[in-house]
Image (cartoon, rainbow, N blue to C red):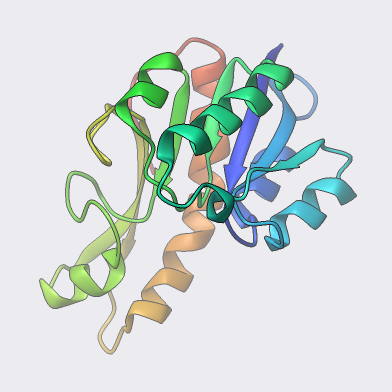
Length: 195
C-alpha cells in the first residue's frame, strides 16, 4: 500500500476526491495533507476525514525558499510518503526539492499540456479561440508544468464561456482524472490515459 502526501494551498477539492477514492482495493492511502496556508479550507476537510495535517507557512520563510523547502521536507520525512500529490499547491518548487523526490511527485494542471503552462489557463484558452480545453496530470520535473503527462481529460469550450464557466466545467473532470491516474501510478503504470 503506497503512502500519499497531498499538498494544498486552498479549499482542497482535488484533495478531497483523492482521499475519497483511496478505499477498498485502491493501492494507496493518504498519510498527510500539508498546506503552505494556515487557514486553507482543505485542512479542516482533511481533519474531518481523519487525515493528519501540517502547515508550513511560506510567509514565515519570506525570501528563503531553501528554508521553506527544508521545513516541507522535514514534514514529509516524518510522514514517509511514497508519492506526493500537488493538488492546488500554489508554490513553485525548486529543482533541488524536486530532485530529492524525483519520480514520486504528481500534479494536476487545468489545461491540456503542453498548452498554457503556469497561471490563468482558462482565460488563455479562451483568448486563443480553442474549441477544447481540459486538464492534465503529470509527473513533476524541474521544468514548470513540463513533466511526462500521465493523463488528460477534455471538455468543450462553449459559446459565451468565461474563464469562470470554463473552470467550472473542467473541475469535475479533474476530480475524475486525478484519482484514476494516481491509482494507476501507485500500481506502477505510467502509460497516458485520456478521458
